[in-house]
Length: 148
Ligand code: HEC
Image 1 (cartoon, rainbow, N blue to C red):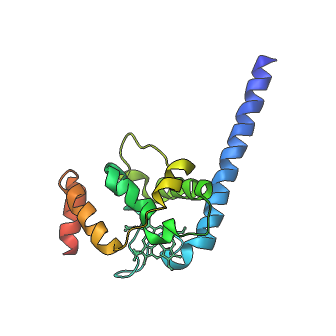
Image 2: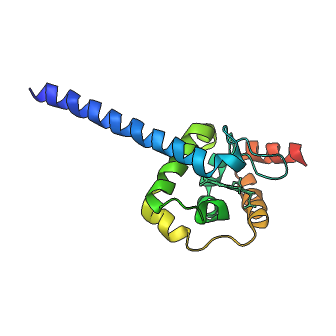
Image 3: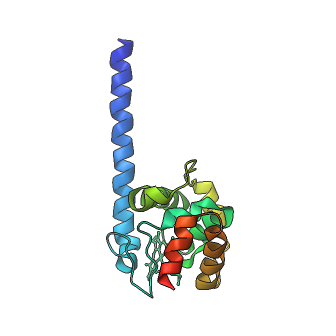
């Protein structure tokens, strides 16, 4: 009997996880995809790619904060919990390889406090943060060198 209950619980949990992912994906399509495109590839020179990239930001505290304080996220119509869910989905879906080994997902409370303080000049903040991260992440440094 205990076993039956356990497997029922597993099914329920799996179902819940799927629903969260689907909701995150739908929210991405409705609120972000218009600018960031379906695969989060962005537009060269206009919208930075999150695909195979956004995970790098989680290697530093300021990078982690930047992902939420960037205007498109901070000022989104989505609520804190929806945004945390969407960002966690996005990072794992589009940039799992770039995430640090000990990746800690965002919580709604964390999003709530970070979004109160949006970055004023995202391009400059981004450069500063990525320059500092490049010192610790050789692949990122190489990628950035290639672009320049
Ligand atoms: C109106 C177009 C637009 C929409 C809608 C939009 N973004 Fe953005 N996003 C941008 C632009 C442009 C940038 C570059 C920084 C800036 O100018 O704000 C950016 C930057 C970002 C960054 C920083 C990435 C980096 O590498 O610097 C993240 C993360 C991000 N957006 C996530 C989102 C999410 C999540 C949503 C949906 C909730 C969203 N954006 C909606 C246009 C948009």
